[in-house]
Length: 435
Ligand SMILES: [Fe+2]
Image (spheres, protein in one colour):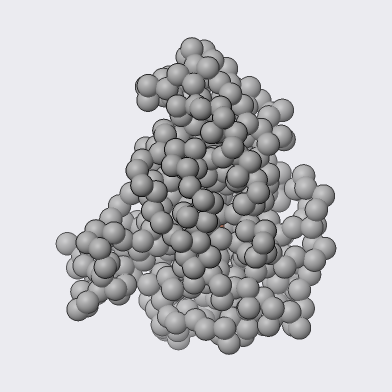
């Protein structure tokens, strides 16, 4: 079946890949289906997770009305923090354990959906917090059984969390971003209503749209599943199983949509074709990276976000210094893809063409420059900062940034080539400024 030479079988490597996806409903107005969909899972008492800002918006009122209209008892948890931590995950889990819902709804961005996944996990299968956290920081134990039903309703066109089994948080004691990654965490359903994202500021659409773009690029260029060692336990593949023919389909379409529509979606909140197209791109890229996994730009992003000094982005409610996730990813991407293009030039050329670059007559050696050039043009067009230097870093920070990024082994091992700390230092130096 897998005839492409990219996935040619290798002795001792995995010979198969698994496709997992949440049930998806996509379309303007579909949030009204929330109540009947929750009832169809047999739910009677639902925990509705959101954040304090979203609680005041019409989407929250619509979600609540739909659930109550279906006769469900709803308990609201609106204390989700924008950049979740182990402390905020534990607080949400305590709420869930005390409220004893028989199912969950999350309405928000990645932080809300991830927090809801964690609350569902620890309330369903109580354990010491580090039990399920990714190794080597935690024990990386898989959840011992299924979780309660969870319907995820994203309000941004970015993280893809609604279709993945990954929950990301800051572990405060180590000042490190890590996560919990297990198929059981994947929401049972995703209800994706583009109307929920109608009022997003252009700056947020830009950063989240570039996160989408990088999900697709990283999944498309990840180490092929057929080069990952075969699982020690039959059938127990990691979530980051590597590029595969299923993910490739979503990646190419997401890249094509983002290349065509991102600038329009940022520039004009009333451009429904562009905004809805980016929401669909986010869904496709989410399914893709939920089955393939991301690699270097995301691995570097956790250092960029974690060591922030005083950068405060426009368009975001928070007063605290922060680098929004999509921005923290994309400032690394042109440098990272120049690096990985050397080992997979054809894939990088194909990706550049999907994004709208003119690749006619290009040689394999041109792949890195063409793809990173197209990325830099898109970044400039939607007002992104000029590399890591644009969010407050300077050349003297490369050592500290590399020291943080090297901890992201789950992601770095999914890269198409080996990446050591020296490589990361050089990549941060190359990512410092692009124009
Ligand atoms: Fe991301």
